[in-house]
Structure formats: structure tokens, C-alpha cells
Image (cartoon, rainbow, N blue to C red; front, side, top):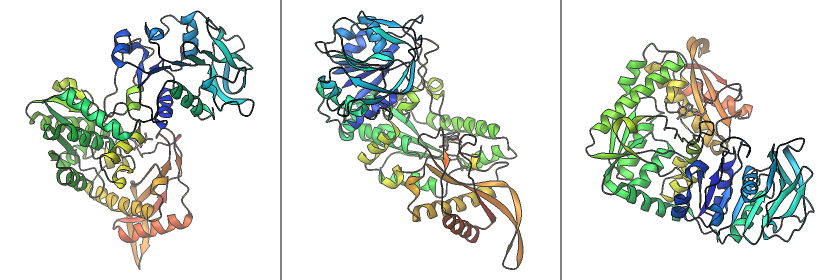
Length: 513
Ligand code: XMP
């Protein structure tokens, strides 16, 4: 396996992604968590130093672990990774002074025979993406230059005898079109054959869970979403009925969703499941509440209370399982606060493990969302379930601006089901990141048959996005929108007006509140 030492770059995740696309197993660990003992234990076959925001001159600048250069394995340094490598091995790094480079640059070859550059300079020069203030001004003894750019005379360097490689640009980003090729060359020269698959990942993960948990009991909070479901099923494969799932049903789920979750886990997978049906409790607490933050806090607090109550009934539990994903882990590395690492808690059960004295099992910690989906497929989860759009923890509450009532929720559930059915029928579901209906806190006048109506207005939303951080509205055809509005108004009682939300994010958010 390959070790990526993270110095805090925004794009470290992309390095791991590129490697997994090459079927190479890798793990990312923050620089301040890697020491000699860790290296020995991990036994990497190759190491990559990521980029990072620091300057090697800064006080307490992140440094690679002792002993890493003596492992005898190939090392690739990227951007800050290159600078820190040169700094440690006897080269020189200097401050910007007019040589900072941000964005597109072109690298030309000095000696294209480097195996790392197989297939690289076919067109004479190659576009790369730079993002650096400091630069290497003298390379370390043993290194040679293999590529230069106008502002980075040492864009590509290597010490072939020691298998050390260092580049100033970011091969992991899309704006370095041949970046993936560079990684491919690196892993090949490090001896990786590309035989890592999701099936082997699953087997390893099961072994790890068994080793961690032993014969102890595990509780898993189930939301019905993909992450917690995959975590639960994986853990169940590992330890069987030592696992109990707790599904806190706040009554704010979509049409038939609670039943589907219960059936899937109890009947299809035979996983012990506690279904805490607490719709009345939650709706009672939300009565008269219209402030979005108060809603969220009310739901969050009750959720934890109910979960804790149910979990407390499970005797002898020592572990709490969470579907934390890799992006959640890496986002939490604190570079400003020194070596301390705080792990972001899963939104629904934050703080619980400490409070209940439980240890964490997080079998998805190293995976990206699409890899969790692949693992889910490996575990036999149906495609339709795996490909579901994201759904927020507070559920329909934040799609019902203003006061929440049972009547409004029922209308919303029906309308949302018709809307999603339309999207599926038109084959658009997988093109859309997230789609849902929201019920607006207003009634308007309409005419149906010969009568006057005074009913709710709905807003439909559908967005495209990569990560939910930014989003654009989905460009449905007018025919589709017209047909959908007609179907909703005909099929759902209590709605007489439908609008389509064409706000992007920013300035809007995806959810209504
Ligand atoms: P916004 O509305 O902030 O949503 O643009 C971005 C993405 O996050 C989801 N979301 C949540 N997910 N708990 C969650 O698990 C929450 O409290 C929450 N709020 C928003 C939202 O559905 C969208 O995918």
C-alpha cells in the first residue's frame, strides 16, 4: 500500500482518488500523525508528500517524519512536498520575489527519459497547474532536472538512484491533463500492479472490524442514507448479531421511507434493528417553531436524546459505528492549531461517543462517496438505493419553511413522490445531484372545475453539483415542468400552484433553510 503524507493541500483527496482509479490502495495521514513507529507499522511500498499552504520558512513548518528517506521506497513530492524534500535533503528553497506561479503553466522537457515521464512529452511541452509562492532555487545533491517551466526551473526533478521524485506542480488536478499518467508511471515504478479492488477492500475491512471489536457489542445509528447503511451492512457481515442498529424515526422522512428502511434491514439483511418511531415526539416539540435554526437545534437535540435512550437499552455495547467518510476526516485536520487533530462528528450523533463512553468504529473513513457506493454494490445493495439523492438529517422540516404541521408534511410527501416519479420516468434522476419539493408557507387562490381554491404553493428544486458546496439549477424542459405541475396539482390534494426554483448556490442554498 501507498502512504500519502498530507501537508494540508486543498487537493490531497484528489491524489488518493487518482491512485484508486489506478486500483492502488492508499491511505492519507496528516504529517503530524506520522512518525517513525507509524512508518514501520504501516510499511508503505511508496510515499507521496502532498502540497500544503505553509512555507518551509514558517515557524513550526510541517516536516516529513524522521526516517522516511531511509525507508528505501520511492517518494514523490508535490509542490510543498517538493520544497520540503529539497529543504530536508540539502537543496534550497526561496521566497516568491516575482517567481510565484498560480494557474496554467507549460513544462518543457530537459531529459524525457525519466520513467516517471513515460508518454509525457509527446507534444514537446505539457500543460500543468501551478500554485506556489516559494520555489526551489537549488536542488538537493543527487537530483537532476527533467522539466522546466518559465517560473519554475525545477518543475520536475528526480534522484533516480534513490527513487525520489519531486514536482512543483499539481498532477492530481484536472488542469494538469496528463497528471494521471504521471501517477500511473510512479506507481508502476514502485511495483504496484493495480490489483486493488473493492472486493479486496471489503475483505480487509471485515478483518479490521473483527480485530477491533472482538466479541464486544456494537451500536450503529441508521438514518436510511447510503453511508450509514453501507457501514451497518459491512459491520454485520463482519460480526453478525453483535451489531444492533438504532433507527431514530423523527417523522420527517419521505413517503414510505421508514417502512423501506425497516424492511430492508430486518427482512432482507436480517440485521437486528430498533425502530424508534418518535414522530409525535418530534412534531410536538416543533409545534409553533418557524425559525430555521431553532428547528434544527430542536431536532438535533431530540435525536440525540432518543438515540441515547435506545442505545442505553442495549446491554454491554462498547462501540458506536458511524458512516464517517474520508472527506469528513480530512476536513478536520487543523493546521492553524498545531498538531491536534479533531475529527468532525457525524451530524446526528455528535459528542455521543464520549458521553456514552463508547469507542468508535468507522469502517468508511478512508473512502470517497463514490467508493462507498461501489462498496455498497459489493455488499449487494440495490442500485436504486445506492444512487439515491442526498437527504438532510433534519429531513422534511427544512423543506417546510415556517411552521410545520402534519397536514403540510403529508402534502409535501405526496407531492415529492410525484415529482421524483416524474424525474425517474424521464430518465433524469442520475443526472441530478438532488431534487425535492418544498411546501411554501403561503396559500394562493386558484380555480379548479368551477370552484375557487385556496391552497398551498409548492416549490420544486433540482440541482447539479459535485459536492453540494456549489450548485446550479437543473435545466428541465418547459414541457417537463408543465407536465409535472399538472400531475402534482391533479394528484395531490391541497396544492394549487407549483413553482420551479432557478436559484443557484451561491447565492441560494440547496435546501430552503
Ligand atoms: P445546503 O442547503 O446547505 O445543502 O446548500 C447542501 C447539502 O447538504 C445537505 N444538508 C444536510 N445534510 N444534515 C445533513 O445530513 C443537515 O443538517 C443538512 N443540511 C443540508 C443538503 O441536503 C444538500 O445536499
